[in-house]
Length: 301
Image (cartoon, rainbow, N blue to C red; front, side, top):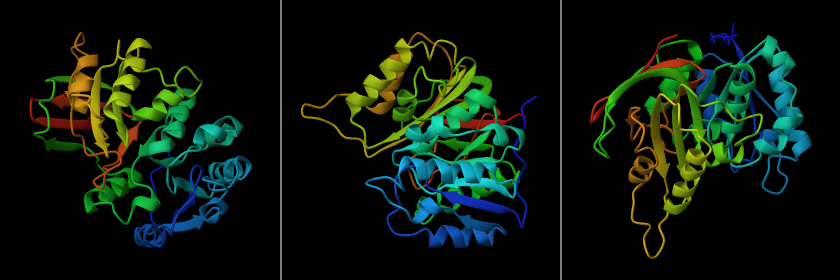
């Protein structure tokens, strides 16, 4: 039976490490917020380190994350920020202690590598949500959902959107996914989740429309959509177009790739590289229900 990390309680110790890019500025506001939640915050060596674009070289970042994963007094591990770098260290990590004593791993963007690897190898849930560097810009709702996910409170969510009509339907499955470009970077590796019977979430930032089209074609041709139960499309922020224009929105690009399937699709989910980045618990079973405008996501185990 899959072990579920223990939910946090006041007095618990949490670590912040930076397994990818280095931090510009500081994370003082995040530390203050986490402390206000009753948590004791411990800062890893990588939070103040830099090596070219990374928060220290590969060896330091791997060692810092390894420390946070292994230390049994630490109940959750926050990635300070994303950027790029997790794929460079994932194969250096030893998850044997983590497997026996799982703890929450939190982050998004490049942290998709960790989410996917942990789900593929161990089936242990993780949290896709705001990172300390994004706490300052994060909405009150995004931080509230993160706290709820960590402390074992409900993160079920309902919303209504006008961006693009959803594909109507209901489905149940384990929630998985993350940043689209990162999912492509681990395709066919031992960190690549089996998408069969899953509810897939995707998001991205700063991409061109044609690159999103290309990445989705790659997933489609790899058979990744063949047996999924549902699709949730989150924020695709900072999109770039060419001249001439690609001619399709992200939603239209998505729909083109899944015409032959009948699973429900939810558009404009508030998660990703956006201020209103609501927490999602990957590796947990959910029920997705969509009408043309409304979306409901409910955790059922």
